[in-house]
Amino acid sequence: MKRTASASASDAFRTAYDEILATEWPAGTASTAVSTPYGTTHLNSCGPEDAPPLLLLPGGGATSTVWYAQAASLGRSHRVHAVDLVGEPGRSTVGERPIRTPADLHGWLDAVLDALDAGPAALCGHSYGGWIALQYALHAPHRLRKLVLVDPTGCFAGFRPGYLLHALPMLLRPDAARTRAFLAWETGHAPLDPAWLRLREAAAGLPAVRPVTGPRPSAEALRALDVPALILLAEESRAQDTPRVATAVKRLLPRAETVVLPGVSHHALPLHEPAAGELNRRMLRFLDGPAR
Image (tube, rainbow, N blue to C red; front, side, top):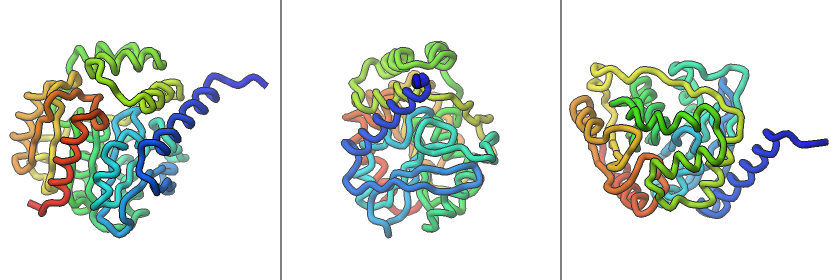
């Protein structure tokens, strides 16, 4: 029987996903599945099992594997749980109850944290994952110990029009070539890990699910947020105006620490060296430090 294009894409994706875990993640990384009302959530976890929990949320299409450059470093003092977003490429599976609203995202993360049963957690998200993390922090601040947002989008400013224009071909007709061209443009042809690029390109061949989005949080909600926060911004981001975002963060989250990471673009985070080393250093100093 002739195999379908989608089946071939799924095989290529699984092969690339497993390669990243086997070659880039720390030895002993555990893959687990957590049942939620919204489907099964796949986690890649490392670090001492009795250490404080840290959840890592990827950007759209990136999968949990994108955090490989952070896993070993953060796993020295935390139990790291890198999450495949339900409905996005990865090993998580959609259930009978789809995630359609921000409230559904809240309920999904509530269920993930319930399953981990580890007390208040630190939560970190990149890009779209940063938007989810901030939305959750506003929903359930009592469940979080600290919050880290890595060049979050949709939180403090809109996208640059040029970014959306360049992304449009990839969004309308996703394939490996368009994905590769877009990432090369946004990162300034940064030398991204070849194995991860194969995974990212393979993900473009999978069936697409429209991500849940919503408005930016209100100024009143942000000013009332009482979770210690670290905001890490990409100096060379083509996704959004970094100085504008930094100004907005300082105005809306005056108690947050804001750092602009030099010489790195939006999609080169969090995996590209040498920015990954600085990202790790900043995150560890914040996560291991006292609550403010």
